[in-house]
Amino acid sequence: MSDRKSLQTTLIHSDYKAPEGFGAFPAPIHHASTVLFKNVAAMRSRNWQDKSAYTYGLHGTPTTFTLEARLAEIEGGTHCLLAPSGLAAISMVDLGLLKSGDDVLLPDNVYNPNRELGRWLTQDFGITARFYDPLIGAGIGELLQPNTRLVWTEAPGSVSMEVPDIPAICKAVRARRESGQDIHVAIDNTWSAGIAFRAFDHGVDIVMQALTKYQSGGSDVLMGAVVTRDAALIHRIEMAHMRLGYGVGADDAYLVLRGLPSMKLRFDAHDAAARKIAAWLKSRPEIERVLHPAFEDCPGHETWKRDFTGAGGLFSIVFDERYAEAQTDAFVDALRLFKIGFSWGGANSLCVPYRIQGMRRGWNGTGQLVRLNIGLEEPDDLIADIEQALQVMKAQ
Ligand SMILES: *Cc1c(COP(=O)(O)O)cnc(C)c1O
Image 1 (cartoon, rainbow, N blue to C red):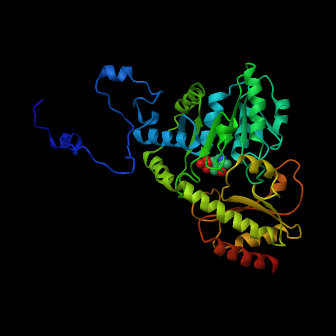
Image 2: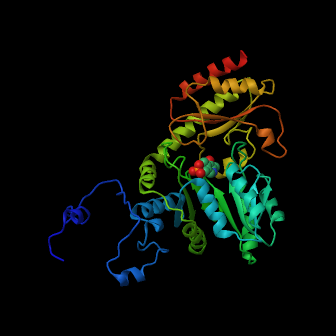
Image 3: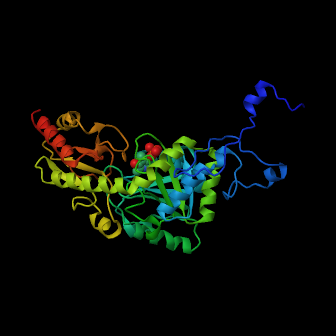
């Protein structure tokens, strides 16, 4: 081959190399499916599992490894794996640790798609998913069977916001493990962002985060993560990650990396605003209960006080039962700053009505439930918005 390349080849193989030594704060965004090897020996010797080298875009790039390392640090763990959504992270844990014949326990107030996944595992995969009272505490011990491999927890639970006694659940599971059973506790720690609840310090084995929420903070990316302090455990989950092909895009990973420096400041602002608004709602005659872990109305409030150092911006309210669904729907429709939509953790306040009576076993009360996500707007403006919407509701 002559030294002169055709234009077509030159378009692909350029001789230019940018100068070395570029320094900047943001982590570089590495886009790649193919990763290059210097020679065959390098290709044959590389191991994708220990993250000491690169093999293929799906198995990680400097951008995704950097995000994984930073998330492990935040959560107080040692190993992390990314997944393309929070729900994908949940499924990666299940498929990494469960097989046909196994049993998994889920709280009755678990994030609903996780419940749906449990039902699917039961129906089609020969696994049993059983649901427990989220306030069961040490009583979980009586539900553990010899084939129980995984106990999911969520703190607080979705929508109804009960705060579970995680240390008590972990203690019962650890006792089983010490007698030789392969069994672990996983937590969906999304509400606290790993900031307000240090899950590993309370005995949890596996932490799952929906990075879609506070880590990103932008309402513009879907991603999830699993963190452990145990190399053998993450290896099992990593096999599921690899077999399922759960890659994440470099630009998305960058968006999450970009959110991290401001995450705690944002979280603290969501927390302060949510508590201010929750306290105002508590004083309103239209509201029967404020289901925010920092308030006594919330089941598990004492546990929250003992184990948590803060609260997220997400909580629920139960209206006095004299207001019918059509009226509370009118309240939601009348809100101007609060928009109607799922998810949370971004700058915008959101609101979703739930038909809670059909969602929870043994739910007491007939008042309508509405979940609020407090964004980063001025809290007094949000209170004024709620106040005008309450007037619209009462005029119905
Ligand atoms: C949003 C959320 C998830 C799932 O995250 P996605 O990225 O939307 O899949 C899981 N658990 C909880 C508690 C969540 O709020």
